[in-house]
Length: 172
Figure 1: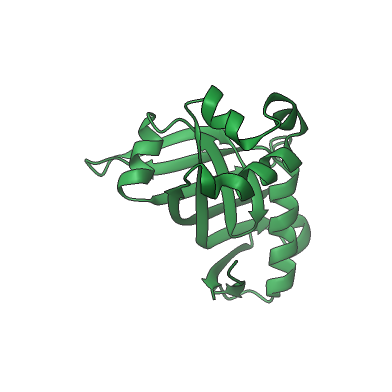
Figure 2: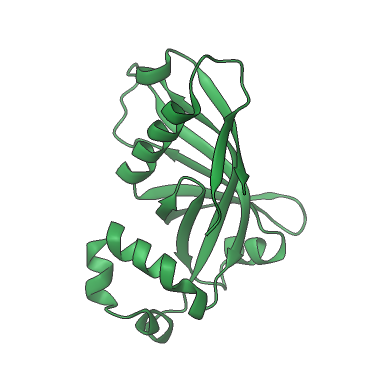
């Protein structure tokens, strides 16, 4: 497994550790995201899907390869991932993130880490599929790994009003 380092690229006085902690908290507290991809004609496509995070730079989604967003990931691999607390009220402090990077479909054999990550986040998933082989046998869906290379985070409670922290993630 590769090591990833978060580097702040915006002009804000925040530490990479604070951004990492805020991002980890947001990822672990939510289950749905908006996943945007690019169609063959360069037009945008967006989908809502469940996700499970291995870390802030490795996120897994389980989706049928026959869908448009999967086809887009298979052909170009680029994605934008939007995540926000879904219990926010207008006027409250905003918490959200946009993550960008590349994706790949995992083979059944390479899916063990994704399967384990999903069963940790979604307990019922392990009841439905006690073994990885059952996922492929019962569902068309396959695991995709989203590898995050950069992003933007807003957490007004931590960093202040209207402070969008931009960052890069270097995979070593």
